[in-house]
Length: 400
Image 1: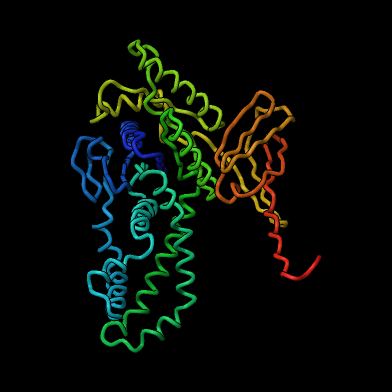
Image 2: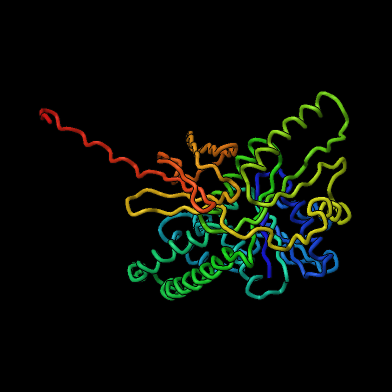
């Protein structure tokens, strides 16, 4: 089974690329589901068919679904929702406010994960293509298994205290704490299982959709960086809406092509060694099965989009005993030993001979000074120094 998740900045065309990938996969004979986790669903518009919260067959071997968090809250969360609302309301808040506050942290993300987990376990489909929400929401979705495990471990740790504190409450509350805690433990086990599935490169792949524009490229770099932190395997990048060379001549199109050429070169350098797929900017809307089929053909050039296009880590970050970090980046085709680094905020500029690369650093490294870099066995190792201890204030009236 394959799970492929498309992410990127809002408006770059994730939905159309995901739908085109799913359609091509179905045409190759694979039973395929394309599902949207974005609250602002547009998958139905892309396929040009009405969709609901349950998988609906839209073509041979192809099913589509717009995951509804609102509908699924009641399916997955009745016990916990009613319990939390009852406890909060019993402490003096109105029922309306209680319902609002009773939503568990990450409720919408967990509901989406439950859908993905169910498909992975039941294997009802050969391939599941996820049309994800904009980058920030998707990163939060993907980090939810780790976050929820933290919540669950702390809730279990204080289980005895919770049960003891609820003893004074009458009625149904006396019988619900054990059920709720058991439900949380069961869900925590499920999210741990899903975490293994999402990080298994033989099952799951992550693809970033970009347009050749500065803000889009920068956000995609951050996404790849954070995916690397959680060991989520990225296997390619899709560059969407590339202006054709033979576009109408004129000042506007010439300037746009020049801008795109600049950022296309940046994408080729900064996302190496990932394979890059290019999709043209069409004069028509990419809506409906015929247009999506054409997009899949133009983008993947006859390749099966469900295969794994890249195996290997794009970056590895390892904490050292002295509090420093080492970042390792694969650079198999760079031979020069002259490594120059320049860091500015969360940006790192790397120059090795004629090779130049700009990259966005994750927060844990952005706050540290770079201590140097070296090439070892086709990998660039960059050291980020431990924070210097803050100087203690000298009490007034003393000398040192």
